Amino acid sequence: MNSTEGQLSYVEYVGRLWESFGQPRTAGRILGWLMICDPPEQSSSDLADALRISAGSVSTTTRQLMQLGIADRVTYPGDRASYFRLHAHVWIEVVRARMDGLRALHDMTEAAQPVLPDTEPERVTELAWVTEFMMEEWPPLMKRMQRELEQRGSER
Image (cartoon, rainbow, N blue to C red; front, side, top):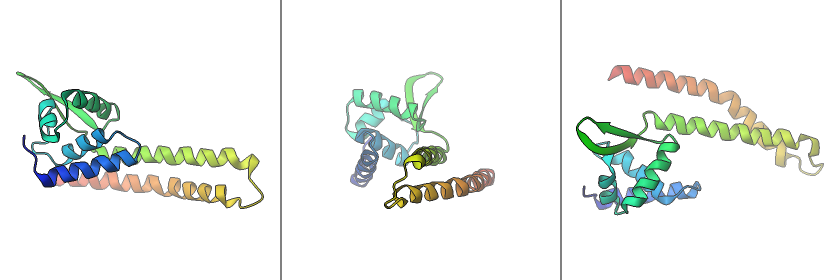
């Protein structure tokens, strides 16, 4: 499959962004491609050709994306190839995972309580306030988003 310069530019953008999150750039590039490719399912060779990467990189990276719950492997009867696509509702799952990070940050502030400094305690207390606020606001927002997602699905 041939990819356009615009597509490759977008793929590089996602790759660099993903890398800034501490993830491999190739994983971001495959993620970016799976976001914009047509058809939405891509074989290993489709990914290698479109992104100009090795089959080994595709294999390693798609395995990582599947372990993260970002990509799924799809097979079809009579077709020996495996295809990859974004996991259904992946972005809700990504956002949900960020909530786990917020909880970990909040736990960090709780652990600091016995050793809070007298000078500028807001170095800890501000993070405690932010994480408490987000943990309170987040669940209703996620429920609302889930309802709207379900409504959008029933409208199709």
